[in-house]
Length: 501
Image 1 (spheres, helix red, strand yellow):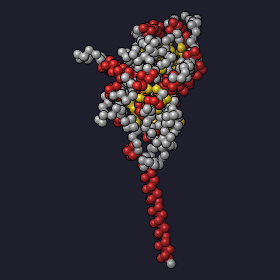
Image 2 (cartoon, one colour; image 1 turned 90 degrees about the vertical axis):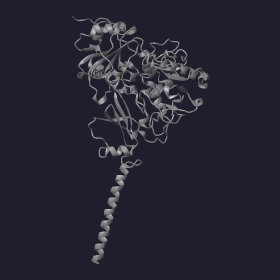
Image 3 (cartoon, helix red, strand yellow; image 1 turned 90 degrees about the horizontal axis):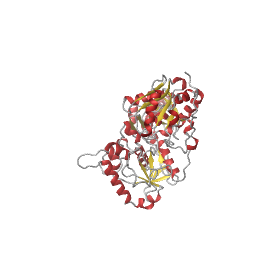
Image 4 (cartoon, helix red, strand yellow; image 1 turned 180 degrees about the vertical axis):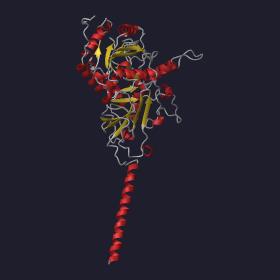
């Protein structure tokens, strides 16, 4: 009897030990499984934006900001093994830093994007790579037209520096390509369709700004630049298409963000919806607010995370400007303001470049300043406005002819100051105005800046209400109706306060 009891106890002990071992083994299997991770992907998304960890919920809204040194939610998992097992993450790098989108943001979306519910159904021409990604040096080994945007290694990176500020067509094209990949989570504002008869608009994937920046010089004995040849071939192609002939191109979208891009073809293609930086170098018959869309520049300084944005009393510089000072046309005002402001003790007004140390200096200067000047240059707009916005530095816009992105839905007067050029150059006006703005008024604008800054971020995959999504929404509004907040601009009075000796 005693022997039976002993054997029974040994059996129960062995069974318990085996059960615990199997439980531990199964747990480890779940932890490293591709399909069933121990921490479900629906619980969190971890995105790296400019070297900061941002935790977002499955809907895409930021919930917490963690410093780079903070422990990750998956710190207990061997990061290298997890990376091998899970879907490869996206990494888009440029001069502003990098953005990683982890596997959790690429989860299968069972519902997908319903083309019938999208704001825009977009037909995109399958132009040869020489018109788009081929300009980035991309070559397909399989004679494919497009890179595989579901694999990071297949996505060519856009060059940094000043090239980057006009990279709008790159982000829009990537977004359309990803719209047909079910596991890429992105807004459904625009969806690519295969049949042009089902489309609301037709997208022309020509990287016009990059073509100008890299191939506008004539080479050899040809006597014509590659940029000009591409534009000529583009016109010939479009004019031969059924989609163009249907409405004479009025439902076509062409991005020509650099003011000199599409210079040779713009007159022949003037019926399209242009996506532009401004109208400074366009006749009104070719480009105007009635049919075209203004898009923001891609900022070149690092974005400031809201939690680390410095308040009023921690910004020692009253007003900041760094850039080209001697400009032509409307930009002559920069030189006048330079001589008015350069010797003021709480003003930084100096020459600067958008290369290397110049970008770092501008980034540091803007985050340390209460106000940042956005002054007309060769054209009414400049990248400086968007650098100021993502730096949470209240913009002072001195450009009478400027058109602003998304101004039909965003009231810039809530976070910016508008000053007429004729007032800005009056002795003492600008400094008296800015010094008269107290902490409470500045803080209200600063708080609003932090709320709108995400509208000016270009990223892949796109996110709800970021710059890419906002451009698609602007196009959707453009083909229906045009309403703007321009009437709400509040120009500061030209009245000059008494200047104390």
